[in-house]
Image (tube, rainbow, N blue to C red; front, side):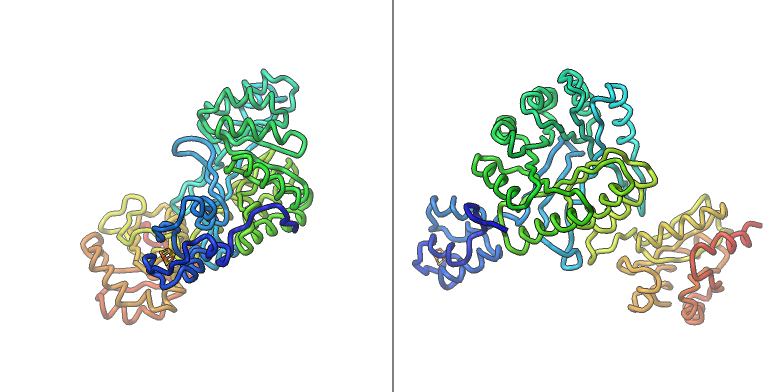
Length: 449
Ligand code: SF4
């Protein structure tokens, strides 16, 4: 990839040349060179040197910035965040800002058509393992030929409260749409080689984030660098994504250039705009995994959106911190002191699956959640975090015997080996449940009488 004429993160030597070179040690490093090396690796802040000149400060400002800039659009609580990622692989640390998913409405569908699509986007909200997953934004595309229709559609979208992308290559018409919702900080789509100066001027004038688009990565980097030199910092990159292979290659190349090579012109979030076919929906999943900060789609059938949102939830959780629920004794339905008690772990996915299976039986029950630091039953058992002792302690801590007079507890079939010891510790009758919670409804029926 060409890097001529574009700026990259300064190296330690480049930083060193701008430092006072007095080795005074006030930065807590013995030499200016040692400080420069830490700064190049983004381990310290430039402010730690009190003697750096303002010119050097300006020149070095970038060295403390994240490899991919955080760009937001929309206003208030629903504002969409993109970028600010530091990793190439999720398992190395974590990914921070989930891919923003947006539904495109076309102004050629008329205002009623646009409004019904906006309603559709707003209704796409699901609960999974205790979290609300939703479509995050809407986009209005201009293809009607009527600037008035476009402005009306953008206005309707802005009124919905979701972040809006204004999709129009004509700067004059885009400007009119921006006027209708500038206070909502829309994302402006897009500056290309042919409308570049006017789009950059519009984004700069209204302080809006701007999508920069080019089919090739060299051209994209050059346009982004040019926009940056013109004073625009909030950029989103749109590379060519004709095929799934293009998408994978281009998005990966951008992420790698930004994170590994600290190549500043590509250090921005990315966006992919996808069509209505099933193949395009598959590309949305690819975008979530490999590295689209935003994906805009012409259609979002519910049967596609739910798995896509679940995938996104899985990719954008910290792999070192499983999603957890609080340990405690939960009621499922309206249990009494005659209702059965069972236990599981505080890994959210396990808890909600077990709970849903109990609910299916329509038999009220008590569900004891044992703190296993978010591990599932077998993992926690193997790691010694789910033991007869820890379950016995939870039974005592959460006063299980006071809530249920049955003096019986159902344990997950996969940990039947702990039944003897648990019985000894608690003096309770231990019933071995099914290995999979899908077997719970059948077992629960035996308690319904
Ligand atoms: Fe050099 Fe500044 Fe550190 Fe002093 S405080 S050693 S001048 S980098």
